[in-house]
Amino acid sequence: MPRLRERLARAGRRRHGAPDRAGELWLRRRAIHGVRVRTRHRARRDGALRRERHAAARRGRRAFPGAVRGGRVKVVVSWLRELCPTELPAAELAELLGSRGAEVESIEYPWERVSGVVVARVIEVRDHPNSDKLCIARVQTGSGELEVVVGVRNMVPGNLVPLAPPGATVLTLPEPLAAREIRGVVSHGMLCAPDELGISPSHDGILVLPGSLEPGMDVAEAFDLKDAVLDVEVTPNRPDFLSVLGIAREVAAATGTPLVLPVSSVDEDAEEAQNVATLEVLDLERCPRYLARIIRDVEHAPSPIAIQARLFAAGMRPISAVVDATNYAMLEIGQPLHPFDLALLKGPGIVVRRAEPGEQLVTLDGVERTFTDDDLLICDAERPVAVAGVMGGELAEVSEQTNDVLLESASFERGGVQRTRRRIGLSTEASMRFERGVDPEAAPIGADRASRLMVEWCGARTLRGII
Image 1: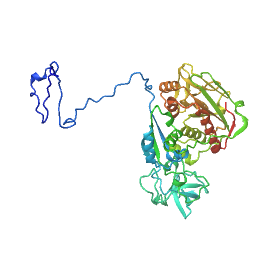
Image 2: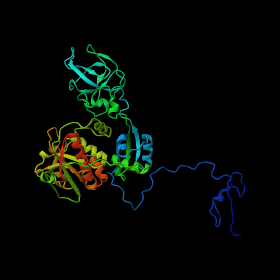
Image 3: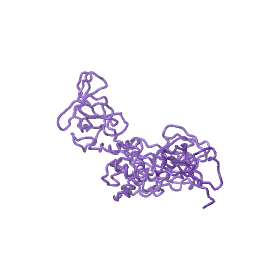
Image 4: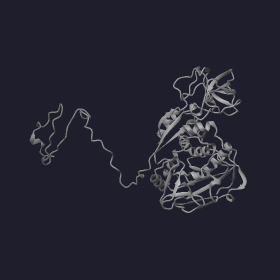
């Protein structure tokens, strides 16, 4: 091209072209500016960093509402393996889940310091000679007898209790136990409360163990207190990860391990549930599905110790067998549930409706809350008893006096739960799941699973059919 004037800028070991001067900076017709020839494939120095800033938002895509954030779920590995019997260790499970969109923030070992604690049978409990508040328990460990000084007296001869002898470690003490003198009596270790073993936060008394155990058994092995817990960060687009079943399903798909669904079949009583209570849903848009089970003759008792430990490790506080059954089923399947004391429901029945402006309810956290006509309430025949998808109320709370339970399992519209939660400033495990989306087909499965657990743990009976 004879009319094209080519110029090459100066570069290392290349002397073609005139040296730079002011005239060379002018733009000239048909000139090629900025061409540089080098012997290497890249520049001699790294390029300058650009100003750090967020990437530009993509247009044409609806973002999640600002309040819908990712959630967290803690998964006990042994619980996961019940639903997906994989032999992968915790670290490999964490790596696998991370590659599938469920980032594991940490692997926790909540019972790591529980060591050397054994089952002991109480032989005698007597007063401490030098204290009005302390007592002395003589216990049998299978290999001999020991005396320990105890600060509470809820155990009786014949009970099985956890004993931390000298050399054992528990969660609440930084050093191993040793024999020491307390008010003139040598205590050979200590009897343990639930919080000292990571069973629950309770420190009200000594943990009484099931009678099926034998003295000398290792407590950590008896209740699987040597497990790992995966702390999983869940993104808003994967609400199925907010349950042990959802995580297990992902692991099963990745490894080819068969998925084992939780047993939810229920042996029903001859009495018909629909003859006991009524149900009326007045806002099908905000509550497209609502069903209830009736469970009679529940006993007020604690849930099994291994279940309490799982719930506590997953971030829930064990309360009673009835409440623990609903929380356990929710964590396992992902369906939030709520038990009402049937005797405290007017009617008895359930009405799902919008709140009247200014209507009030005292929720289970003891706070009186005021609602607008955009809030959805669960009511009996006369008054509100729960905030739909968020929290129950004190008026129909399950207690030690509860004999019969109406178990709620429902599907609520995501946006409505979110607006109510933000308006009243109350975020719960239930609202977190409803805001992200709960499978509507899980409602009967969750109700049946919790009903089955109540029958097993409380000696209850489930009435025939659903309301």
